[in-house]
Length: 167
Image (cartoon, rainbow, N blue to C red):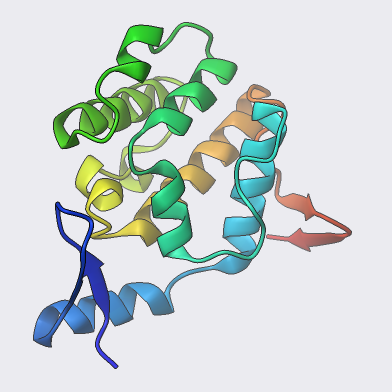
């Protein structure tokens, strides 16, 4: 079965050849435990359930691709780091969605997200590397934990539901 990707018009297109191989490789690197830790942390900071447990890369992309949740999330950690006007401006338009994602990344880097763990707008918006987005969010959570910001971030022993995982 060929991997699928979204184009700019939100239609599913099958990926073939190298693209299919890359999509399969990225999917094999998806870490559900890491995703659950990130989702639990985001939900804790936001004060409500924004992300469900045990979901895949497509789900994460669909929840974050316009950058709105990311901006609201970073504003909870660092108030007024992204202005309300920028958050609400033309949601669904690629250029504005990418700007919101970039604003999140810029602020996250200022707060400790390592460059090597970061991600880019197209990684998320186009779905070209959602696994890297997960890695970036997890690394940011670890940085917040180390700096004691973001409601504790993600600790080396994070708890999701009734289970704890040691990393």
